[in-house]
Amino acid sequence: MGRLHPAALRPGVPEGAPGHEDEDRHVRRRGGRLHLPPWASQPTKPGAQPFAAPLDDKLVPQETLDGFAKGSLTPCEFNGHTYCLRNDIAQVVLWYNKPLMDKWGYKVPTTWEEYEALGEKVGKEHPGYLVGSVGDTNSHESYFWSTKCPAYQLTEPNTLRSDLSDKNCTRTAKLLDHLIDAKAVTTKGFFSQGFAKNSGDKVLMAYGPSWYGQYLFKTAFKVPSKTMAVAPPLKWEGESTAATGNVGGGVWMVSSHSANLKASTDLATWLTTSDENQAAAPTYPAYTKAAQAWLKNPANSSYFAGDVSEVFRSAADAVWTGWSNTRFPDATAWSNAVLPELTEGKSLTSVLPDWQKEISNEAKADGYQVTNE
Image (cartoon, rainbow, N blue to C red; front, side, top):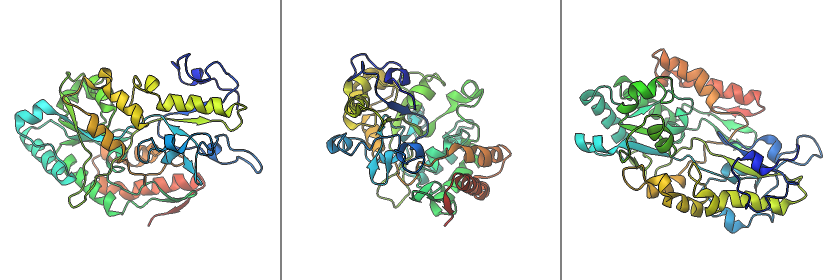
């Protein structure tokens, strides 16, 4: 690794950030789907030192680590240590068009069963309107992660459980198949070519990440202000609490090779926890106090039809940690084994075995032991 200046890694790091003037420091940010790469937390060869410093080892106070949203540092943990700080969360929530829901007299669903029933009703009463999409490369994170499907579950550091015959996977697939048949859930991606122009104004509901508000509805679909609202993550009937998924986010790591560990750690801590930096961040901060400052910023909240604060906060603490961060991306198997089959008219239920096989093959190629039970 060469020396990494933090300002080059994340454009816009203010000159006043702690230790900004000190270039003899290694700080790295990773974005996209979160996974702690093996070179970060494990030696690349016998006697080597992992890239990332264990931040919980006298670098970051436990009080600070405890201030992150529940479970949000799980992607940073390996062998009992924490090797990174979470920058932002993309917690999944239920988005809905409030004026249309009110006009048509629809009640916002709180369970998956209610969501399914309403979707089937929308398909009959308002053909062309949609309650969701399964056609994007991250759609599985919104639906299958949120319903606690064990598609990517590490039971040991090098053992992956991928069991898509689990009831949480099969009932999710069955529900979505019903809604696809009702033409209320589309197999076209929200971000696919032409969707915004042709169908962007027909999305009554969407189950997706917190950034959908600004970057899907406002920017891509150009939905007018005070239209979109959010509701808490859904749960199955009989369950007392809801879980949810996560679609993106980033982490900061500090190099264990730095001669200035304290200065590097101070910078990473400031970037992730300070109101000064995070209040104007583009996406929802993982650090709870910084998230409060973010929510108070009108730029992050004035667009919506109502206050999103409580839904965003509770969903941030509800992300299921059973969908593990592996050494390989989870989008590939979904994109290769599922999306083409859905386009050809096959059901989600019928392609679950192919999806599981693709995941298993990827995992084995990356050195994992795999169990499908």
